[in-house]
Image 1 (cartoon, rainbow, N blue to C red):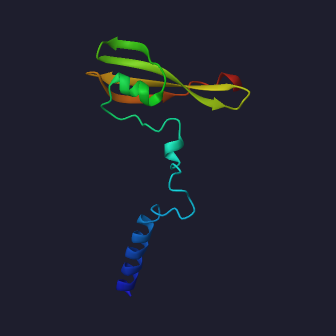
Image 2 (tube, rainbow, N blue to C red):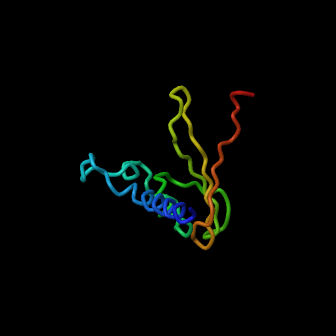
Image 3 (cartoon, helix red, strand yellow):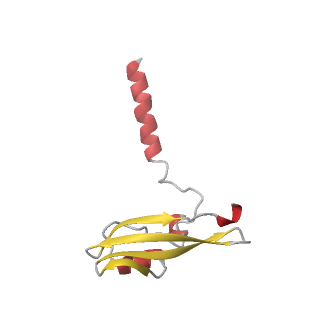
Length: 113
């Protein structure tokens, strides 16, 4: 009984791992979903300032710190409801000219106080 359960679990794991390989009705020239996104280059620890700006597609504003050990701010335009534009703040910390962390700040919603 245990061997049957183990065999079923192994077979389920093998079929789940192969689930993304076949696209039977898609044109082979059609890009994948993630390739069609406007920001398909993620932030990675160790990036320099130019690489991070290129990945986000936005300019950075210096907030504090000495050259090489700085905190930058950028605004990401994530659309909105159509009635109000939505700009999220993103703080990026660099040490020794390399990205060591980032933090999104949605701020306070002043409208619903």
